Length: 277
Image: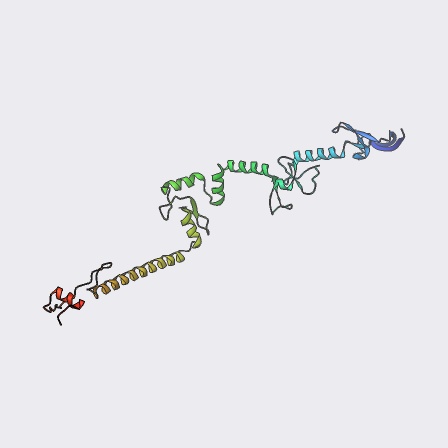
């Protein structure tokens, strides 16, 4: 095997001396983490080493360096794959450590890839943990949207007797809140809650709606009274009219029948042409 030599200078006491060390020209080197010989070009130079190369190959030296840094300053704030090849159309999940296709991740417009940071199963696990930390899924949503817990919502429902705070007829199933301040007001039914939203929570518009309904209700009542009065006046102006559906004709009043003195038999003979000439 060919040999090479280099000079090493070191200081001992106050005098310096130089010595020449002859080392073999290596083609491979044993990596302690790999457990096998690796090509020499996979090792970095290290002047403090006997053979002039690092103890570990580049890949394992980098991992050791990162682990040492994580022990000193903590893990990185942004999780990213280390020493993992991520092909196009794929993404690395930090929780399960798998490289999966984009279809395994939910959509997220805020991400550079347009996909969520975690695959769908890991995302669901994280979601359940987050909800359990605040007391369950119902409290999670109530706290996030209205700032109240499930216990507080149940207490409001019991105080209202389970009924809507406005109509007092339908079950109260919706939390009503002030959209400007975010303060919860009461529990309402679906129709009352939707009605307030359609009127934009504007008391003036609601008062106009009340006046509108009352005004038209009064006009309809007045129209019915006028129609009933006209029907009564029309009936009073025609006293001889028979009842509806009656086939009897009213008898003439103030008239008398005139008799001719002839019997009914004579009238029949006269009609038949048998009367006396």
